[in-house]
Length: 518
Image 1 (cartoon, rainbow, N blue to C red):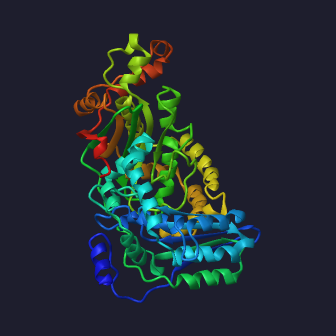
Image 2 (image 1 turned 45 degrees about the vertical axis):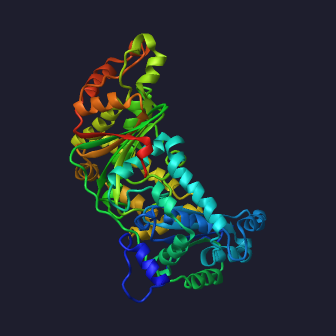
Image 3 (image 1 turned 60 degrees about the vertical axis):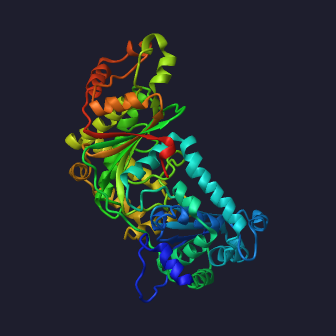
């Protein structure tokens, strides 16, 4: 009966493995003889795309229970007291295609800490009390936190909902409201047995550790069963034209804009290094030299920051650098415009000058960003811009792996993409690039006529904003008089061109915030 239940639970959403010899887990080792710490990473090929239909959020909840719950030997409270003197840390990272467990501890505590690692992964307690606590937290995030805490993150997840609609990539890793509500402890136990198997596991070990530790870890993880749950990778096409979804929210302080379109290249392709140069020039994350940042923030003081991406960027609000553990085969390029002012706010600030303003800065900012990308597609980089950006990147990417945990994480991601050591190979790829390589990659992978756009904004703004985008009517930049009087002539002239720039908008839809992530 249990076997039948598992097959029914996972049917349709998962790839059920046919009978075949079960392979052992892959192993990646990074020996560092002078290190004081040991890092273990266990990466499973499941992720939220393996969530069963109707059970969206199950991978995330299972991962959280494995690291935030207890073991057969210790409760969470006992674990906390036991581990406190050792200053260890462990956590789960759940993305679309992988779930990664990270354990970091001092080498002097290998023997003392190992039973905890072993217990969490092989004999988790899965108590109803822990399940209820973590499910409640997860549901609160899906129903409340994502809509209230950060409109920037809200717009990013809403874009993925639109871009991957109808696929197993659509929902947030934390799931949907209905999916999380449906989860039971029995679901978690069945999914743990089905999705966390030795045949979809890559073991990573870094630091200064004895060979006996590595052998014991490998041998013990061989006790995991064979997995029947696999990640489901979608094939996604760009839309016809620009499809806009405006999310209407009460008391939003600005308009958070996120736009993107699918691309077929990932870190597995040598074209990716060429796109890194183009992307860095356009809008490297948290860097002030990018074109988007320069024109939207520095020149016009419209918001905090404006960036572009050629893959998912995990927790961009907190991470200054890309982090490992979120590799994906389904990829997209995106433009992230942190919130710009709405008409209501501008009217209150400048009642005499902007008292009749109907629409805030969102359409102007979107037009500016798309126009800058279009300029790159049409004209490419200059020789000077190429050399300066590539030189920067060759130094910058060396910061990606500044800790053993990050180094090991990127090694695991390298294996995911079929590469040996992505970070080591990347400098060589960048060194061999030519200006022609970069400009050809831009032409091949980027375009501005077909994309998805999400805008999270105040309910006072949505109707007027929707009309501007539907009708493609000009959207002049709105300045206070003291600012407009001091603008350089070049900026004034460019503003006029941006305001009239035509976007290939084919659909505009208004969505109430209460109807997202259902």
